[in-house]
Length: 598
Image 1 (cartoon, helix red, strand yellow):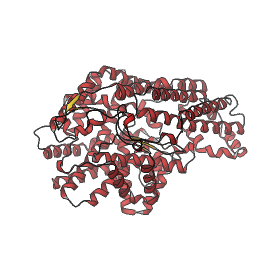
Image 2: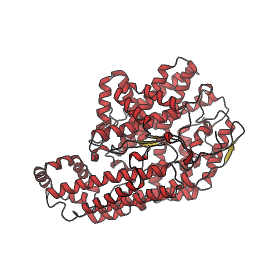
Image 3: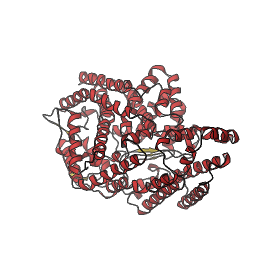
Image 4: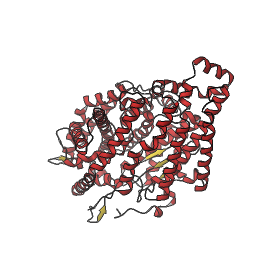
């Protein structure tokens, strides 16, 4: 491992994503911004007349969709460039400019939803008969009508829209601090070399077979965050306060209700997840006990949670090998699915390796009319191959929805976003398990699946509970100080991991490093999505082509139905507790096998 990360300028072109597929030059991007601004102004011209006639309503809706699509591409271009080098001031400036223009667009067009809500059903029906093109917007109008109780006057909608950029300040502050400004110290690695801790290197360091390396990187990373805990508490408090402001303005009873309603999901789904997970914490405690036994330690610490329980089976997975393996594992989804994934591999949809200033983690971002863009920080670990499969699942969901649906219905709800990604992971795991005949390698793979399950269901449920508790605290008038946030997080860690885990003091600062806490109750969807994906993969394995066809219909559905209804197309009712319980039952069964293999 190199002491320092390579600079962005040192990364090979084939390992970077092709931003030129969106715009050949920055000048083309500039022209797109000007055209989008002109379209927004043209649409704003209908502010006082949009409901006067069917023709006016149709034209305004068409301008709205055209402008929003153009801004989506411009936004993606600027932010993808910024994410791979957050230290580049020109990239930052472009990202800020397009963000400001998006807010300006939302402010200018804030009159549209209240205007549509002012029309009675009879008038809308008459307009549809006069302008058949309005039928294209039926689902869009129905979704607006669904949220009527939370829609404000045109003036108030414009005011809320104008505050959009300000509401993103806590998230932006955290992102710049965590990705650009925060510097971690060096540690001595397994080979006696001095190596700097980074966000991308932290988990690989936690996977080290050298416990001293794990302990040093764990303590130094969290002590670094400790030094900024009050700043980060202020940023997180600001995030919660802006959510409270928006929820109150829109007449929701809580930030949680406002967040899940955005995806047309009942808060009961959130509650179901936490209830079922609480009922199955004994399985996570069993996992912790097994890990303690496998590692042969008197005390299991939080810096022992990532290292494989089966040490000798770990190996490097070069990126080229990972791509080939993923393609083979996804074969059950059909030749066309695999061919599109291969196209992404060969045509620079992916930004592969970590470099100085690059955003941590991984994601996929769909771009309508172009193709998805996948960010990785690939480190040649088995987990990185699973991340590749995961993000290409997101990419395929975007690709198929964009291919099948018009722009206004292509963007699937966040609630179903983690299904396709996790289904790919499950198929990869099954492929690797079926391929191996070695008992130790099988144990290693089951260990990996257990760790993935732990991280995606239990850990994300813990994050979801943390968000729920801290938002409720703020709503009750309590201050979200660094001490208060640390205590909530530490107590939850003790509860989830149980008596066989030493919850080190440092884990109380882990809340400082979780960017998803600035994503408005996002994380619970990892757990529900994982549960749904396990069920779907099981159907594909048992039923074959019919199940595949239904799954691909789900992936192509965009936002044409509410998320729970869309998942029913793929054979899963996530509105009930059963899929979550079924996933946790599988976790228990794999624990049983692991205990026999070790």
